[in-house]
Image 1: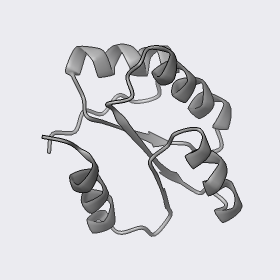
Image 2: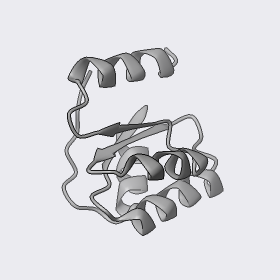
Image 3: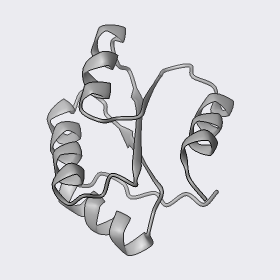
Image 4: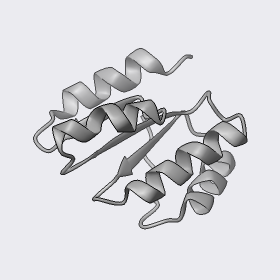
Length: 96
């Protein structure tokens, strides 16, 4: 897997980078920025980029996970999640 670190980007910048780099997965550090995550998911739907899966992580209250998945985020990894579980999620969901 190749990882491209984008730093702190707006949803528009994330979409532009995803298109430019032809990514399969976008990983978000939500860090309480639910509005940013929601705008990104809305943009992905609007641009019909649903072939890209989005995963998220950070200090996310368990009761918020269902909401994030409703928006289209494929999986949410809370603090302490293993790298192996993240890799497995990606391998199972990226179509090659």
